[in-house]
Length: 140
Image 1 (cartoon, rainbow, N blue to C red):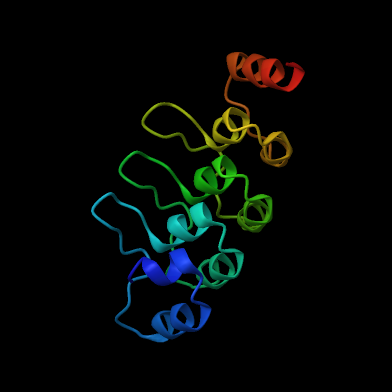
Image 2 (image 1 turned 60 degrees about the horizontal axis):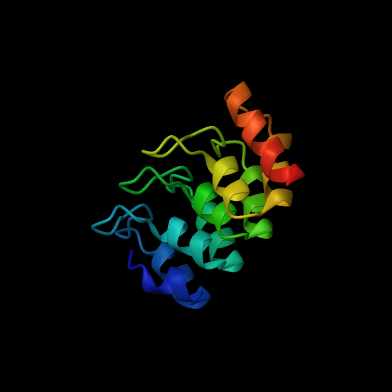
């Protein structure tokens, strides 16, 4: 599936592409970026809703750096998309990228503390060090 309809929120085209049996919703770019990750990164809420409802979609498909759609949405401050993703049982909120960062780390490092709180409600905390880092950012 081409990236630009997902990136630009072309809902009608995304719907048309997803209806075609030969379209692969998890098709990735050279960097491993999927249409869902792109839509999450760009804040395309309606596109994300269409994509995550598709039966063949891997909601946790990561790019070559290990970034998942949840990480992209959390790091870019797209709270509504983070909520959409977390509502799905299959969304793994505890995955980490090649640098050892998870979605909660992306949110905190970008100053999106309410998003970090949403992810924490999901029960994701990997270590005492991570708790200390989150507390430090929240208190300073």
